[in-house]
Image 1 (tube, one colour):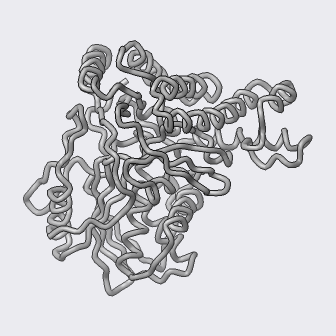
Image 2 (cartoon, helix red, strand yellow):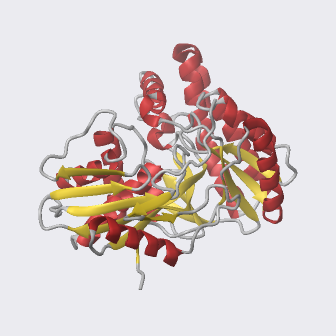
Image 3 (tube, helix red, strand yellow):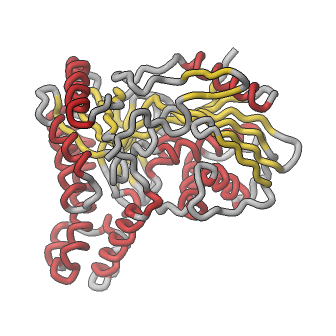
Length: 422
């Protein structure tokens, strides 16, 4: 296994003309980044160098799901928050119907007509903004062409919602430049439709909703059926530390969609005897045990994860409100055990990393974050012991993986927005 050294998704560098602007260092253990003004200025300058015109600057954050994995597409509860890693997007409208996009991460340019937005099977990064433009057209928005530069510092294949971040940044920027307005809730729903229907990833609503709506210093308890939500303050003396396992996940390779289909099958079987069941959200442990033999082992375990995870979200909300770090940590660790054993979306590299973190005195709990099959873990750490924890992770990672880890201490931030610079 070859481990990733620098796992940024949309750009470790913004390249333009004869210059290179170095973006945030992946090796910095505390996830420190350039200041907002400097980063926004760098993106603006890179756009001017590439397209030879001025631009407006937008950014959308990464998402960290504290608890509630694979419950969103089962109409369940989730509790994510945002962190100060972003997709940055510089944009200038055009007078024609052409969309010219440059992704600095890949040093790739793509040009398409807004009158010919077609999905490309197994296409690359460009499918996400194309999907957003397609969804806007389907909703009756008449947007002009645009020149767009995409950059960012969300790790590749991390499980931190980089696709939703790109989608919301694109939609928010396009609508802002065309002076057309959309409610942020509608924006999130539209971006999810773009990923489901155009890109082909059957994700739930969580990622788009939290990056579009969650306020700084808060977690979002979201009901994925009703889309009602509550904002819960984060705990001041506990820090969430994200560590990349070194293995990038790939949702479009099928594992994520397979799990979603298995959940649908389990709910359909249970609904044969209880017609009020619309999704696994409507099932309890008594239902599962009664129908265990009919479900079979695989569907039973998939459903058991969802049912118990929804309960863990409710208990985690109480622990967060009570600032009970020990209870919240235990719930997170139980979540990972369920993801590993019942939902089977973990891997050996993630499991061994989590086992190591749980041996650290400063850690209350750890779990895989995101859809699974690689990506990041999140650990709840005593606020005064973060540097000690990161040193231990670094030493272990060097010994077992032969590389420095990518770590990031959660930095609360605002949702998708325009960044104004002088």
